[in-house]
Image (cartoon, rainbow, N blue to C red; front, side, top):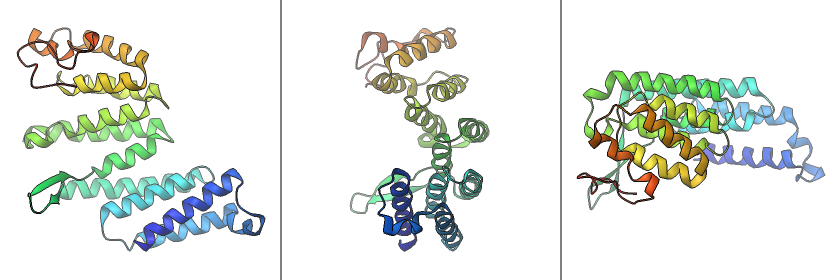
Length: 246
């Protein structure tokens, strides 16, 4: 916990320095060299953290902080966090946590691979694209052997990633969506269209047009997944309309 709070402190110092809000008496603390030193110390200490999720989150934060003034070291932290995330996934797969002991409810833990990719996407879209491809290749190999709950987890995560980047990097978002169109038409596209429309209506219209073109040879029943969007309906048309709604 103390290490995590230290990361937050460094964040505050770096941001304050960047916008020129640090008093003159603190100027020495906010030099680039001192920032590098503080970040380096925290990165070294993070290696003593056993929990993969905490270590990944620390390294991702440090990489984010470092990118403006030391891109090479930021890339090093991102690379290290990616290695930890992929090794953890190979060992544990998708994980759940007990949300309510009394009700025996569980929640899904974050996929650490996506935590890293989402952070990298803010700085280097091409790198994020390559890592996304790695995740999807792994998905293609393993999806058929998974439980129904996790069978399309990566696709859902990628749709979320694309949605998050629409305003800042629409080209990256469209690249992700087009990559996902290689897979069969499923219900996640119903929600994706409405979520993208909330952020960029023109983008969503283009996405809808491409979805229709891409899935034009699907059965009429499957195409009904795309039927609600142009009418702004909360439910799609057809006998499956009560299975999916916005």
